[in-house]
Length: 83
Image (tube, rainbow, N blue to C red; front, top):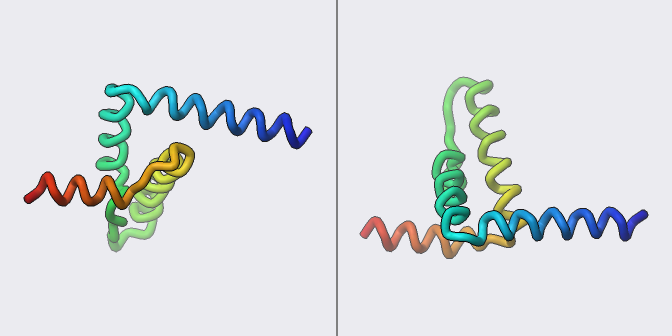
C-alpha cells in the first residue's frame, strides 16, 4: 500500500513537471506566481481577505514545491529585469 501511494505521488509530480515544463506552462506558472503573490506576502487589515490571499499563495507555493522550483533564482531574475 505504501508503494502504491509513493507511485501515485511520483506520477502526480511527473504530471506537474510535464505540464509546467513547456514554454506555455512556464508562462502560466509565472502568471500564477505573480497573481498569488508568491514573492511577497500581502498584508491587509481584513482578516478574511488576508486569509483568502494566503490561501491563493499557498496553492502556488505547493505547486512550486512539487516542481522543486528555486524561488531564489526566480526572485533574482525578476530583480534583474526591473533594473
